[in-house]
Image (cartoon, helix red, strand yellow):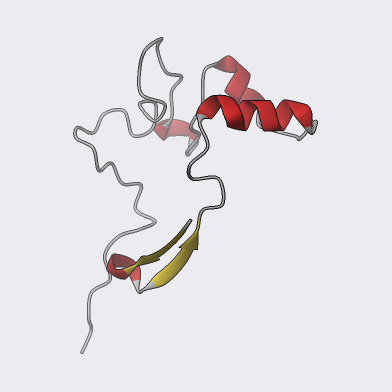
Length: 87
């Protein structure tokens, strides 16, 4: 649930639902009538910026629509780039 991200300035990340399944998340949203992005209903389970996001196809990984032109596991939007020591 807690993670120190040493690659990005030792920031503390708190992930309270990290072990929930996609179905558990959807059930929680419905049960508590929580607001959510309507793009979810249009096949966008992971939403980034407009030009970088597309709906996923059946059977694709939930994050396949993000930075879809990049290959490999570690697709990066640029928000978590490694810090350079300026000393």
